[in-house]
Amino acid sequence: MPGKKPKAEAVKPPKPAVAPEQVARLAYELYLHRGGGHGRDLEDWFMAEGILLKERRKKNGLRQAAKGRRMEDKFRSR
Image (tube, rainbow, N blue to C red; front, side, top):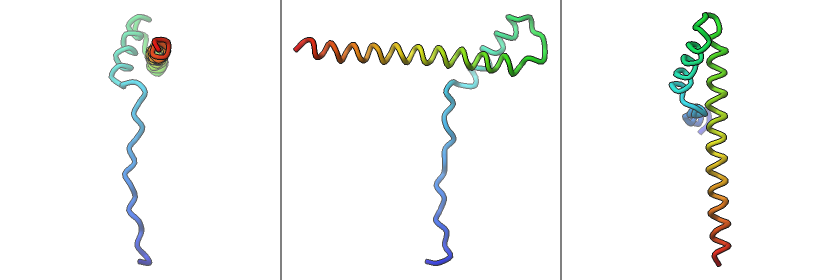
């Protein structure tokens, strides 16, 4: 029908790569570790986020490597 607009589909926001709660916890630990000076909260946040992302990539890389080894083992046993 003319004049009717199609309904817009609900768009889900992307899932964060790491949980904000984890980032906040580590950022606070970094804040305490450096002596607690104010004004560097974003620096602590981004550093914590980077550390957690690096750990996640390393963990996923190890998982992928193990998965690849399992596939290789299947072909070797034949």
